[in-house]
Length: 421
Image 1: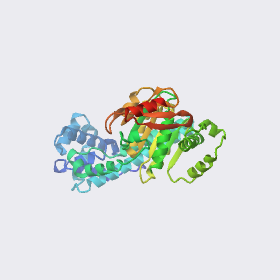
Image 2: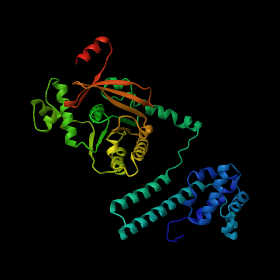
Image 3: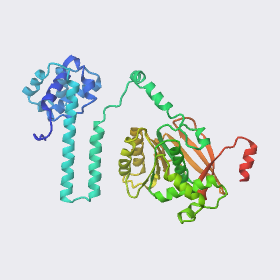
Image 4: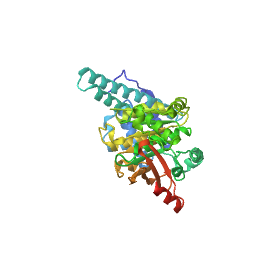
């Protein structure tokens, strides 16, 4: 239904449709990459553009007569006033401004869609038929659809990519070659390019400890880092950092994370707290409760776009996110966000084996408890690696101190010595 008070550019629509018939449809590929049929304001313009698009998709010639015949085949020609249809022949005399017109038509279409979405939201709120949270979710979904429709085509020809993009991507990837996790055994196996990394394990194996330590070590190396936790508070995260630092400085200490949280103090802690307070590395902790994956990604987006380099993000953990459409949907949204922001996203999954969600990941790890003695021996297995080959790494896990130590076994004597521990 046409509403005359809506944003529109009907005269441009006439000119661009007429231009599509010219020069054997020379400008059709550029226009169809920008516009869809429902971007046109008048219904007859939508019908004509659909006919042009069908001919274009079939590789058929495009001119006034072929489009007229295509309209007749689907019984749309009779719905268009004959005089109006013939008048389109005189609407344009050049293809020069077609691309510019297409962009303007798209903008008007987006404005109409935003207005319609807003009207529905206002009506829902006025009638009070839905709770506010559901209205907000519905509004976000409508706006997300408009945003997705605005995205230009990502199709790039093979030759064009090599001509214009390949070398730049290689240079970009080279910048990650020296990125370090602080775990020497893992750094020898894995280059941490931007991507989605998923770590799977059952509870109490040390997933959160591993991710908290690796994120802190990334930050110490100069990366911006964000730890997103639905379970752990900022106080708990920081207490674990103090426990690790105490253990590094005093390896024979009996002081545990629980002791630190309950005020058991050592003289070294004063200096550790002062050092952390003055630390220049960029590590942020997001405490989460009932935020959906959309809420989470909305919180993360400004933290990613405001950085000169995309951060390393850890999410602890996937199954606890309130998910209306299942964790698979959450995983797909996280992957899209990671790709759009070029972040390095580490997601903890509270499952022993990879599921459908993990198939979208670039790298999949499992953590396995191989020995229950203290310190525990933990095996990290890489089951999938788009960045390189599969591998295994072992760690000694001092669980009371929340500290993982790389276990590097280069000789039999090293193996014997570690087994004695």
